[in-house]
Amino acid sequence: MIVRTFAQLIAISASLILTGFAGPPALADSGDIIFDRSQDAESLDAARVSTTLSLQVMGQIYETLLNLDSKGQIVGGLASAYQASRDNKTFTFQIRSNIKCQDGSIFDAASAKWNIDRTINPKTGSPNASSYGDITSTSVAGNRLTITLAEPYSPLPTFLTSVQSLMMCPSTVHGANITPIGTGPWRFVDWARNDRIILARNPDFINYNPLVTDHGPPFEKRLIFRVVPEGSLRVAALKTGQATFVEPSLADATDLTKDKDYKVYTGSQRTGQLAYLGFTTKIPPLNDVRVRRALGYAIDRRALTDIGFDDLVDPSTCPVAPRLLGYDPARCATWATSFDPAKAKALLKEAGYGAAHPLNLLFSVSPLQGWDDADVVIQQELRSVGVNARIEQRQFAAWVEFMSVKNRQTTGEPALWTMGMSGSDPDYLVFLWKPPGYAGGGVDDPVLQQMLVDQRRLSGDARAAELLDIQRLLLTKAYEIPLFSPGWFWLVASKSDVRGFKQGYTAMPIFNDVQLP
Image 1 (cartoon, rainbow, N blue to C red):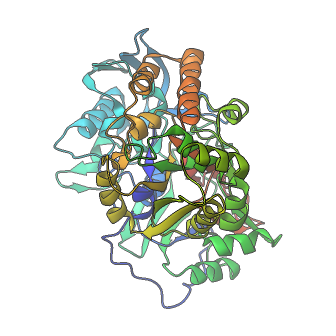
Image 2 (image 1 turned 30 degrees about the vertical axis):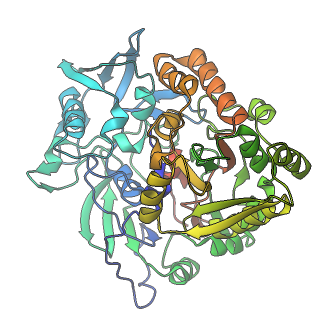
């Protein structure tokens, strides 16, 4: 399971001092794939960071034990196969033989154990540690790795497909220093902080990712991630051939989609992203399901995607993102609220609110392109049914701090808030809704809490059925109002004559198959 919040997605490099180019850099050399981004990676130590800007780079150098295919099914990676015990507390992985690290050393079961042990060690301080579950032991017999947990944790194999579980070669770490060495398609060459990271083709690479077409090394010679903070300069570099791929602003992406000479990649249905509306459910009247559902009926999801995101995202009614286990939009639609202002007004009247007694709420948000417009749309739609929602913006770190207090309060000004998640497994529902929950948003509903624990004991169809029951409860009680998916962030653009680029799960770029014109 990879879980990312807005705080992680946007406040990724708040501490970095960004430097940019005075103008577009020189033309790339033949065989260079150039990716211009707004910010630099934070680190290339897979155990110490989980920010997208870092993962986009590390995912080229390191690989995962398992992969997801185009249908979301778990397949082999560095491990050719795995087995789970019936109680989902013991998992055994068969590591492939003779996997070469980029420095010529061998990646084996002991290497995989080293990665996991280092990550879950509290001294490492890894933000990814909890996603491995409550591991009690790891052991190696030949090329078999066994992981034992204190409690059932069926999401573990899916998490081990995600970029938050990347496996470094042990030769990467030298005390407090690292030299990135992995088994992936690109090997580390150089890093000029806040300027560029240079990677080179790994000639010994053998591909096991089913999303990649070519079985061997990448086609092109080098992959270079450059820092270009100014969006207009990134687009200019793309148009003049000085960059192969760029991270466009939302406005630029909209313009480029209208030009046949360019492509804009939104991650299709593999982003794992979902945006939703939440409530301070402990503060009256938002502790009343009628009021929460009324607010849901006031919102037109299509207006949000049209006005806020220029149709680059899709409306969604499921708490689970598209393509994840348990995603069933037809069933979700029968439980979720739909746009129905008359029903919203009727429920508010039933709860004691109307023209003579309007409902006043705080609308707590954080500034972000696309969202700013969507938040205003929500405010206007609520006003049309007699709800006054006062928008209050905070930067993400401050927003998290504020809402962590606000969501625990039982008195005071009631609030609604927008939030987003990104993950490769629906177990992020535990992260969100089991108290304390993210930013204190956990729900004090014992039935929901038990269901969230129970789904971790199950696998396959049984787990999918339990996840559907969880979504039914979340939607009928309106603990959350899903808004849209699949991707509102991490857009990528290129010229149309560039072939082979893909975005993997959670919007990770894949450059193996890229062929330059």
